[in-house]
Image (cartoon, rainbow, N blue to C red; front, side):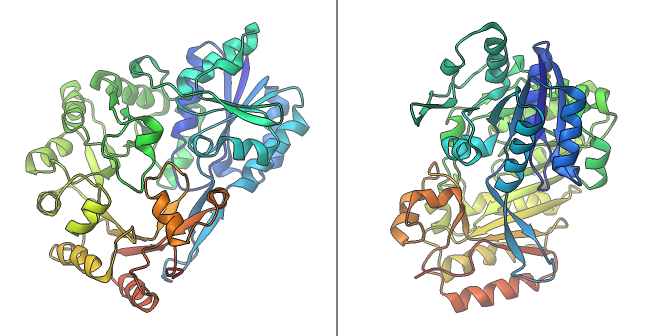
Length: 445
């Protein structure tokens, strides 16, 4: 079948999900092309031209988010604005219906996982896939071509009798059997020019259970990993198909499980390839000089240390799974190494107070500012009921109806007074090397 995968993302990120789904369809023998909204100047006009040329029978729309944040002025601490992704996705869906009225439209992607029925209702569509689409999308295409029952596919969401039905998702273990990400279909030179590296995943699942994060409920609490051989095979595939470039590991925690991260580094080293890579999510667990040197030797050129908090109280409240001692060990090891790194901090989760904020910065300020800077996120994005803190947010009055989640809700601990927050934000924004994202200006209480 002729399959068009459409990446609707327009925020700063690699098209990893669409690349993997396109690769899965290619592996299954289909004729596949992609349309990337990220670089489109006129989505409707350019997508219509692509559809006219390619004549797709199936259009898969990949939705990364419902809403995001964009920086409007890097010199102003309040200049972060919410960006609603929905109009872009609607424009894509309307263009397909107008230009290819007989093509099947199927929704997927992380944003669809959280709000399947909401998206289908919003776009007036009938079908989508949650979960692991690199397995289920080829199954969908096969059933569509051969008259199978598409309504039994794991993770599907569909309209029936005026309502919505959702089939339970399955967690697959055989990740080595999935298709390689089809980055050759994307313009990676343009991505590289703006500083975005092609991203590769090494596993699924998360056992950490952080209260603000939905991944454990989305992907399961058991780690399902690709073999180190398969991971490096993917890297070599992207290099061969697209030319040498830096890659990024897009796992929510590259070093968890630690032995898996180490094994990948060793596999890269043993093959002797000149590979460079980075990761935006390294937890302060097992980050010692030995591991840092292993990453460096394998070609790592940048990591972001996801500290989030250095308050014992908040580490417990957020279920982060590590201690202040481990944070200090990680920061010491990275600060004393040749590996460039940045750091992320998250303030405002339930229980956050001026005292816990002070505890965090007492630790952070005892080290030099990382060469890659510090990203401070203030307020918690509430984008799905899968987040454990959802009940706290409801009780706080900052979420009065769950339907608001599809429009975007932020939470900030009521223990953080407005005047204190204004001073904190201004002080942090004035620091060299700090970027402040304000998800909520002050508590509603």
